[in-house]
Length: 604
Image 1 (cartoon, rainbow, N blue to C red):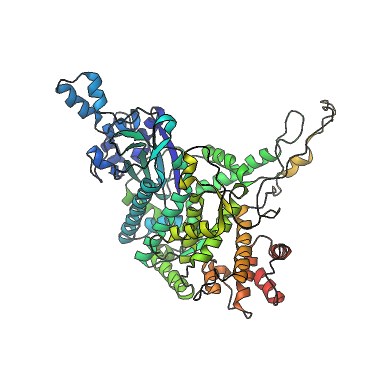
Image 2: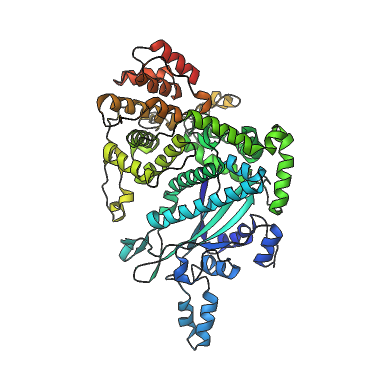
């Protein structure tokens, strides 16, 4: 994801943000005023944003002061100008208690806000770092507008204020929310990394004018959807303004591809990925410890495979262990000159390509736009979104936010950086829910009655196959077996020899999601006319979703089999996946087996 979230608590966590985050993720010198420290670090001052500023008497774009940050995020959620308000009330003759209450925003809270970190895809901030001034301004403007649009979406669709007994009453903050945005330029390693910290306050005003706290659990639940929306908005505006296009790039084999700017060499991405290499090396050791761990009885504590869920915690540990110390920040002009000079030799990319990176990207975009049409069929998109979300979520149960995130990813994959009509993602989600989803909600609380928390599953029959769930088989239980003595306890010798070999992994859900989407799409296409569309070209749609290196020539056989052959090439097991589809009653490669299998091998 390109959007991260972290909770801000009054006390030590707030002091961390005031000491480092507000000055470009560096170390703020002691007893140095905030604005002076920001000027020394070469980063701009923080700015207020959000529709809730009007209720506080603030203006969007106004500079964020240290006293305002301390009042809103450090003193349990008080008014940003609480100190002047309290001083005026005391001067007017109010008692200290009444003066303190005048500067409060409802009850005092421990969690005062959340920190959203927005960063574009690597190829976008590489163009920002290595391009000219005009390119830099365009990308920064697109980045800021995408953040503002995501904040509006959070205000309108995500944030809710709980009040009443046990928080049973919920309402959207009609006046919006308040946030402070801080603009940063580089990563801790010194590499270019355009990113912004959006410190979002949990305080919101209800319809009756009273202040309450938004439900913070809803924010991390919708972070994936916010990241997908942000990625789509940034890429569409950058590509539309600069004449570029996007292409899928596989970062990790057998994982979901990410959309990057076409024409930017991937060697430049590796040049900036120093921490990724360090985390990957640390992860190998942590995975080895995981698969070789034993309990007191000498038996394996975990399965001898590493699933996606099991990799989450070791990945967080590896990120913390390899985190470099803070470095002294520099002004942006010096950083851009140093980045361009230092990228030539270590990355292995020619100097002409780096100096004319935008021109190379525009040439690649022209080739893509000439051969890939922007075709979006809502009915077929609903099938893809529904099948992918069904497979990739636990036991096939999901919420509306999962469909929305997948719809944004689908549009980014098909449109290749083109702008879409407003509300198209919502239209795909509505089509997926009405046609392919079954409401299985059994709400026990008022929260479960909200539309965003309705629980869905797919309407399709779910066979007992690996397409449905990725849960490993249960471990056999020991019944009637005596406890082994320490002398007779077996040693895990063969398991210790996994170092140096490939640690087995459970097949990834995204691979099965691709296959499931192809099966369902083909079955619906051959049995009903609801997903055909009179002007829809199946081959053009499938090629629009394929990487450039996997594009196949025009098939010699009818178009209805092209989708199946290419989908088989994208699947995990290739011909084995096709046999699985045949066993489920869907014959994919009927009259042209030889040509289809050759196309599948070429795609793999």
